[in-house]
Structure formats: C-alpha cells, structure tokens
Image 1 (cartoon, protein in one colour):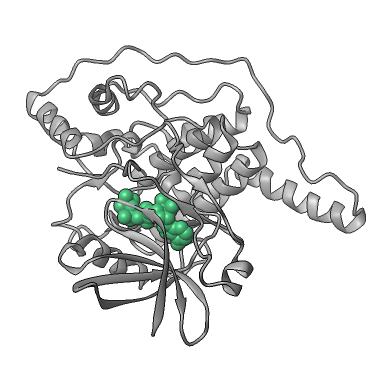
Image 2 (image 1 turned 135 degrees about the horizontal axis):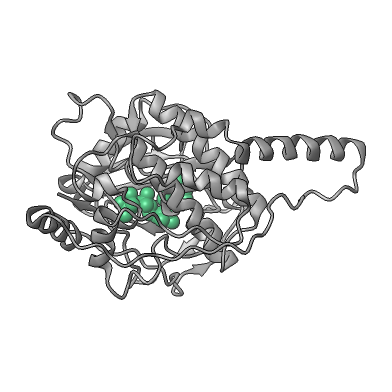
Length: 360
Ligand SMILES: Nc1ncnc2c1ncn2[C@@H]1O[C@H](COP(=O)(O)OP(=O)(O)OP(=O)(O)O)[C@@H](O)[C@H]1O
C-alpha cells in the first residue's frame, strides 16, 4: 500500500507515531515507525496484533518497511484515533473522569481483556496510556510487552511493563500471567477515578513503591467516593494473591458492570420514549470510608531486592504531572480527510517524558 506520512502525533519509548494517508483509498491511519535496526519491539507488537481481531482491540492494518532520509524504517499501521489515549481524556478532565465514563471504559477494557486472555495473550502493560479512545469506545493498544499464556511460547520472554501498574507477583519477578492484567486494570480504574497514580507520592521515592508492591501485601488505596459496588469490583482486581483475583470473564458478570449495562438499556429506552430524557444517571453512591496505607514492610530477600532495584533502574517513572507542553489542536476525522496538510492532533514538546518500560 502506498501512503503518505503526515504530522507526528506522539512519541513512545519504542516508536514515533504519525498520522498517515493511504494514496489509494484516502483513508487515514496511524503509522508507528522506528528505524529498522531498533524495531524489535514494534515487530513483536505486529506478531500479536496480526492475530487479534476484536472491537475492543486497536485495529491492525498492516506493516511495511520504507527508506526515508537514507534510513530504513519499520512501520506498523493501525487505526487512527483522533481523541488519542485514555490518559488524554483523564488529563483533560483533571481530577478524574465522570462516573458514567469510568463505567463505560472499565466495561470495554474488561471485554478486551476477556478476548485477549481467551486468545492466549497477556497484554502486560495495561494502563490509561495504552488505551485508545475511538468513536466506538475504548480499545486496548500497544502490544510491545505482550506475551503468550502458553509457557512454552513465552519461555524466553522477559517480564515487562510499567512498575506502578505491576502486580506483586510481577514486581517480585515470579510470573506474569492473565491475573497481572487484572491487577493493572484495577490500577487503571484508580487512575480514571482520581486522575492520579495508583500509588500516589511515587515521585518522592519510586523505588520504595516497587518494594511496597512486591512485599507489603498492600493494594493501592481505593478512592473514597466510589460506590460499594465499584469498590467491590476493585477488590476483586486488586487481590495480592493472583489466584484470588477474578478473571476477566468473572468481572464481566460483576454487579458493577451489570448495573452499567442495565443503566445503558434504561437510558436507551428512555431516549426512545422521551427525547428530552437526561442521559447521565447518578449510578455511584458516595461513602465516607477511608483506607490508610500501612508502612512499607521490610524486604525479605536480598537477591529479590536487588532484582527489584534493577527493575527500577532499567525503567523510567511515568510523569503524573500531565504534560503541560502538549498543545491540543485536534481535528475531527472529516476535517483531516479534507485537508491532508492539517493532520496533527497534538504537538509534543521535546521534553515529553516517555512512559516507563522495564525488563528483569
Ligand atoms: N492509533 C493512534 N491514534 C492516535 N494517537 C496515537 C495512536 N497510537 C499512538 N498514539 C499516540 O502516540 C503516543 C505514543 O504511542 P505508543 O504509546 O503506542 O508508542 P510506543 O512507542 O509503543 O509507546 P511506549 O512503548 O512508550 O508505550 C501515544 O501516547 C498517543 O498519544
């Protein structure tokens, strides 16, 4: 497929993402590109994406290799989402998303995880920064850390991901299976609700967070204002023992999700009956409960401690101060189609902090 590269819309640790246009169809898509010599992670992502097809997973459109400015480039083509990632939506709201949107995105991410896990894939890096917001809802993206659930297929695959979203068993370097994605989902819900890290104050002493996740037996604090059902949902995701964590299949049937489905149906019904009905029903209740974080439990093993330290040193902390250097100049898809010279959704400052990635 012949295509034209448009403006850069984002930069990650493994690639630069641009808007692109197909010469044949005029269709817009996103091209994730990196020099071929450094494309191992992107090629890895392609291997997973080309096997997956679901309304809750970013759509894969192909890959190719191009010569640009005397550089051999590897390009992964995926659907373009003008609204960007879930972290953009959280940043725009400052202080957390509206309850109805948290419901919606949680349900869609769980559906995506259910599809992935039943397809034998663990994502390994679920967080708002890797959830694409499209016209048809949230979709799981960025498969650079993914692994197969089959131990034989992923024997040589190192543990990977973002420290703040790592489950205790992952932080200890023991295993990274489907339950680790469920823990990360719980952390992502906290991100959506609070607009903050699941482990606040991380910037002051990030290494202690890894020790804390690995050995303290603690889960992140649940936002106080969540309803009992929402907190119960979180408690199923954030069990420190991976065997006690609910599966994506179980979570789809949790009252938190089911209540949302019911509300959606009621809303649709009331739209049909009355065009003036209010769409947003207050589904969450507010409680006064609060939880406190216990002090960090001392590490038990020096060798495991070293491993965690290595994990942290090989990674970078996410920037929870939302990037103020980003200028939002969003265009809708239609206007982008009309004018190929105005294709950028965000201009990113040189000091954009990349998300953290790490390997044992
Ligand atoms: N399909 C898309 N549509 C619109 N914007 C996108 C799309 N894919 C990525 N972006 C933008 O580009 C940024 C970087 O993309 P992405 O995170 O996938 O790259 P990456 O190199 O895999 O990142 P990392 O490895 O650091 O997670 C995103 O934060 C987002 O702003």
